[in-house]
Image (cartoon, rainbow, N blue to C red; front, side):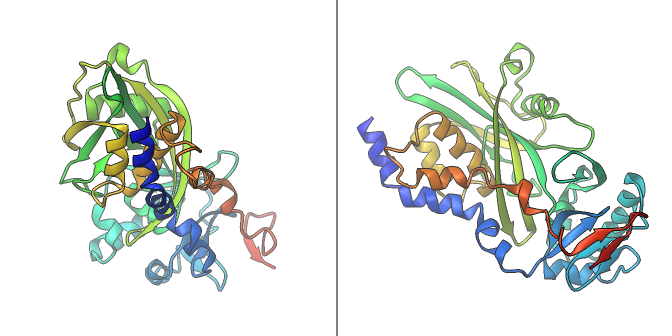
Length: 326
């Protein structure tokens, strides 16, 4: 245990830096005031950066841009109409091939809903969610085992080099986005089967382990992410096999080796919260070997549900559902 603790101790500042890296927008960009709130149906559902706003301003029949916010035309009253109007704009922008995120078009839609109580407002292609800073939900599975000699060991995957995002990077055992039409557990079962060939009784051993939430920013856009986390203890003789072509290879690492891998540029930044959360819950990272322990835990659970509450004091909705500025 002394060797493990000394290894973690030597990486204290690096682990804290990693936690700040996957929360770069939460800690910095969010407070700069350069992004405009994005409103749909009277609810703030996202934030839009200036580099994206310049493209949206070309579609005044779809987006109303004011000095304080951007609003999807309130004349679009239901899920289907809002979704189709947004889709038409995105297809037009995709054809122009100027926006980085849209080059990774997925033909898979994510839902856009209200912040607290669940009300479905519309859907849009998964690749475009980050352009509007809309909350993104996914499922991640920690595949692990207890080796008789090495102790806690964790399976990691290397993403396919043909993936639209983070190609070739190391990642958690299994993960996937929460697409329209799929439940959380349903997604977990689907993803472990497709990515690692975990099926039948073994898949039934998935254990829900809470969520992690963070707010990342890259050149592609804004990522207020919530990952539903599951743990899966695997037999020592189990060898994961990919079934959907999205994984290059799998590797079983000790907990210590996982930390070292996560601290490199070869690891998918937005998967690091899931790994760190698992290592904290298993006691590998703890208050005795990590002086920034509380800070890191806070950065694994940022309050995304309270960020998008602007602007109760500046915007009201009249009885006809139209948004008015005070």
